[in-house]
Length: 71
Image (cartoon, rainbow, N blue to C red; front, side, top):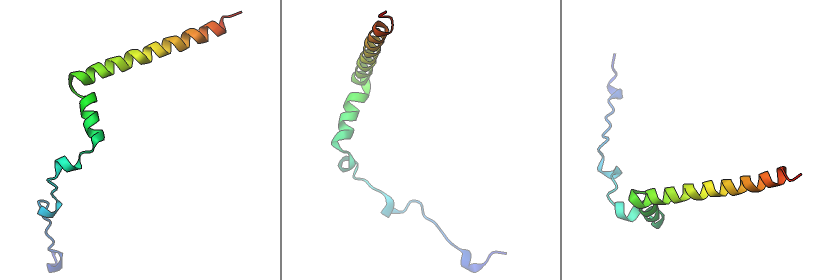
């Protein structure tokens, strides 16, 4: 029940679809991301960011609690 017209072949390893310019496709933003968000420096940046957020939450809570319980 196959027709002769339905003989379609697809080549997924077509050389026209391959881009080998990896270095040219990276932007400076990717370089900054790779430097600050990966490795040991990335862990240090995440720890410092977490501590800064926790300190800000503590300060906001302290100020809010002061004005709520002022009376």
